[in-house]
Image 1 (cartoon, rainbow, N blue to C red):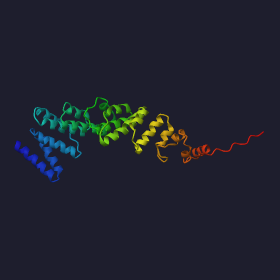
Image 2 (image 1 turned 90 degrees about the vertical axis):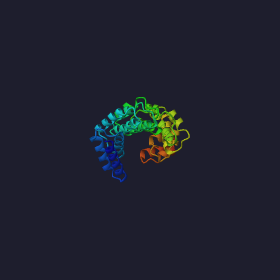
Image 3 (image 1 turned 45 degrees about the horizontal axis):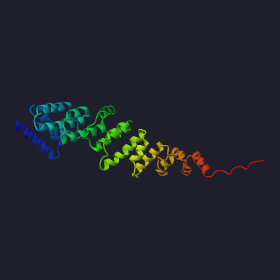
Image 4 (image 1 turned 180 degrees about the vertical axis):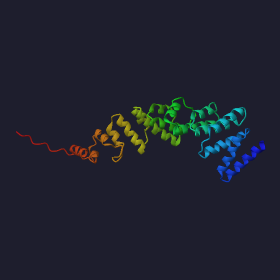
Length: 276
């Protein structure tokens, strides 16, 4: 029997090499579903191929993979089976099940798989499922990019304090810069405007300047808030200009009432002579 399994697996690999993935999937589907003693390797290849092609494994396939993982629990291939099974549950957006499969597995490959699952949770889970998962203690070995993605969605959903808790370190490379923006944005949303000013120290790009302006506006320092923005920036609103008493900028407003009001400060009318 093992020979027939090997033949099917080889046929599937040949089909893949010749750019016939549908045929490869058909061969592996037959092998996995129609043969009670299919090999773990065929199961892993089958699930990976489905996910690679953006197809969703069936629950039946994944339950077969689970049974096989339990059967081969004391062998070297069990970890690989677990990762393939977890990928399948993630593709089905059954994230809790995927995380359960990976629980307790701390080798490098499992850590990467868990990170990929959390990245998919941040991108694809419903709001309710996302919040239920990320309000629990998170894995300590998530990548900076995945932590940032979770924090981004928490901010968007109105949970800036939890976003700040999620970002555990400073990050590295591009993720570090993204994290500073996210920390500033979350701090502003949480009402800690001074923390936002601190985290933006030394950053001068447009995104940082816009956040800095929001932070100073939150502190009530409207002149500094306005000075961080160019006159034509969308964030340079008439309200901020008015609060900062930036009459020159207000004269450029299209609203004739606002521009006229500003002009009255810049060019006040001569006071009328007092009558005796």
